[in-house]
Each structure stands twice: as structure tokens, then as C-alpha cells.
Length: 352
Ligand code: PMP
Image 1: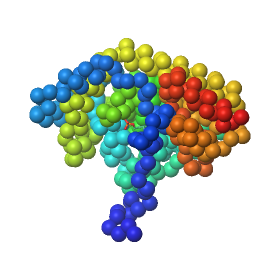
Image 2: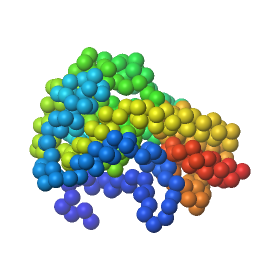
Image 3: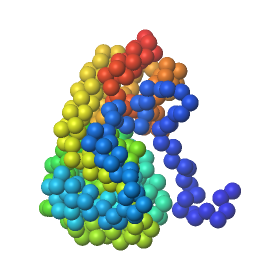
């Protein structure tokens, strides 16, 4: 019985992100968290902020954080919007940029929240199937649409589009917003941020949850020309005038001010990913080329659900979706080298 539920949400089921276990210690490779701690500069900034000023409201405009982010990306502070994680920023973008009478496009398969946001805000959408190798078929996004949403790299495949492909999509849709979700961009894809000043229809969304190790702090950004940031401010102000609390503001700034730590940990994750991909191939796995902090893998002889359950029994959590196109794939987040060695050992037992 869904009496009193809006017709827009009757078909929805509550989003279930990867399991966050409490009772038992697992090797957690199911939600693409960073295996390394946040930057020491982020942690000391949070500790310093946990003091007397907490009695005061935070800055509703996140002025200082927007300045630091703008300097990090080569933009102006007025081209930066801040939210509680990129999920919130994406939700606000769906509200601010897309209209119910025009059809929104995104790939099938992609981040599972896009159809949910579209349904929540009463938007029509069409999902374009990925090609054989899980690549985004750029040609299918070139006719003018009501908007395009792309994760780059895509999730859960990990495959990246080139900047050249993104430029073609932007030029094919001059009358609609192209929203590029760069949650995983720092692990090997080209960022579209450098295109912002040339394309008034481009919005790039980034997060501190992945490459900056701050999933627990909930900080995300939209980056775009001022006109689009102004639209986001209109939507945001209607329900949340304090996007980040003082601790999140301090930690986010601290992390952005520590590029060396970011570069070192990101390079470590990329190296571990590439080593793991090569080793899994020796076990017979198909490994999708990844520009992210996860691997999308399938074994020709071992059903993914059996591997999922077998890994869980061995104390390792990974991600599986009961969806037609990807039912035989697992998504495995890149952890520390020790964690990936444990994954390799468990999988070699399971596929033997
Ligand atoms: N975009 C993609 C493609 C993701 O996989 C995720 C993480 N689940 C997010 C956005 C949201 O990340 P966050 O809200 O932690 O910034």
C-alpha cells in the first residue's frame, strides 16, 4: 500500500549502497572508499575546528572553501558550488537544469542514482546501451536532447571517455546541459574542468569522497560557468542554507591544501589497481580497462553471484548487481596491496 505516496516515487525502492558492516571486520571493497586515511592536514584542520567556534553557524556561502577549490581547479570562486557530497550536488543539478517535457539521456549501464533522481523530479529519460566492451557510444549522444548525464569514468565499469568525446557531446547538445560526474576522475581520466570556460552548457561534479579519502565528511562540488552556478544557488537556498558544517569546511580545505598527499596516495591506488588487474587476468578474469579506483571483472566459468558469496564467506565484501547486462560482473574497489593480495588468494581458490 502506497497510499499518499506521490506517483513519481511509487516505483522506487530505497537506495541500498554497498553494505556498511558493523558486527564483523571485513575487507571492504564494496563502496569505492579510499583505503588510506585522509590527509594529516585535513585531520588537523578538523581537530582545530572542533573548538569554541562550533557555537557559531558556519558560513552559508562556503566562501573560503570555494576560494581554495577555485584555486585548485583554475576557476573563479563564483564558478564553484558546494554541497553535502556529490550525491546532493547531482540531485540539485537534476532539479536546476532539466525539464520534465524534454528527454534526458544517460548510458545503460551507469551510476544507479541517475534514474532515481530523474524519477524523483518527474523527468523523462532514455538510457543508451553501452557498446560491447562497455564503452559509451558517443554517436548516440550527439543529437540535441533535453540534457546528458555522464559519469566519467563511468561506474561501475571504470571506463573513461576522452576529452575529445566530451567536447563532441557538448557541441552536439548546445541547447542543453551536459552534466559530467567526475567522482573517480583523479584515478586516470581527463577532467572536463578545463573546458568550462569554453562551454556554457557544461557542469562538472566532483567529490572529496574518493581520491581525497573523505567519504565520511560529505563534501561535493559543481563547477561551471557563473550562470549555471546561479541556478544551483536558487535551488539550494530553497531548502538548505548551510550546505556544510564547520568541521566539514575545515577538513575539506585542509585536504585541498595538501596536494602532495593526494598525489602520493592516488598514485599508490593506481599502481595497486594495475598490478591487481594483471594478476586477475592470470586467473582467467576479464578485467574492464579502468581509469578509476575499482575494477569491473567477470570470470567465464564462475558466476559472479557465486564469487560474491564465496568472497563474503572469506571476509571480503565486493559489489554485485542483479541486472541483466552486468549480472555476471563484480565491482571490486582498490584497497591496499595487502587487501588486494587477500582478494587474489580468495578468488584463486574460488575459480580453481
Ligand atoms: N557519482 C558516482 C559515479 C559515484 O559512484 C558516487 C559514489 N557512490 C557518487 C557520485 C557520490 O559520491 P559522494 O556523494 O560520496 O560524493
